[in-house]
Amino acid sequence: MTEYRLRKRHRLRQKEISALSERIDSVLGTTSFSEKDVVDMAEGPDYDVVFVNGKILAFTPSGEAFLTVRGLLKYGASKRFVTVDMGAVKFVYNGADVMSPGVVECDLQISEGDLVWIRDQKNRQPLAVGRAALAGDRIAMKEKGKAVDSIHHVGDKLWLVEEQNE
Image 1 (cartoon, one colour):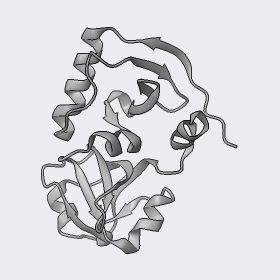
Image 2 (tube, helix red, strand yellow):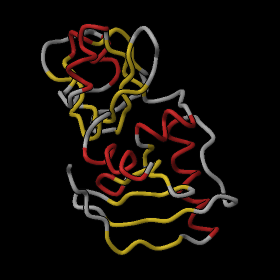
Image 3 (tube, one colour):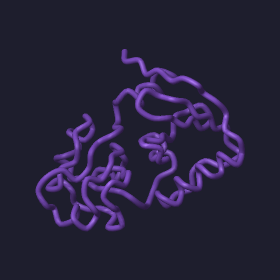
Image 4 (cartoon, one colour):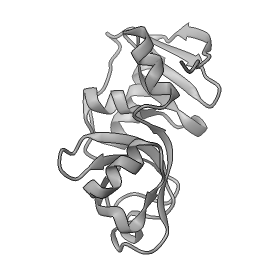
């Protein structure tokens, strides 16, 4: 069993919760948690994580707030998506970076360096979160090379923290 150490967990105030959820909502085009929810933040080994009502639903890689895969499953999102063909799913599911030829669709508003979420073509369900290596229009052109660097995926240490708590 993999251990994921979290430290300095603290409860966020209503103003902090509102600001955090507004940043996430504007980036992803969703409606996530609100001041009515119990929101805590803790330091992880790679990035801070955000607990919403006891579940890790967001995180802050490089200080930028974004939903985790579980958060995306709960709240959904309409922006910053990269859709991969079904042949790429097993690789992305296991933490591989997304290669441009495997992309079938993406949000054209993505800029290089943006956090994005990866979904499968058939079910449109989130598989991973990563950082765009190319802008959305270049990803859509299916150039050679890497399109997204994977940060968090189904089955990684962060995902398993929640399974241990269930």
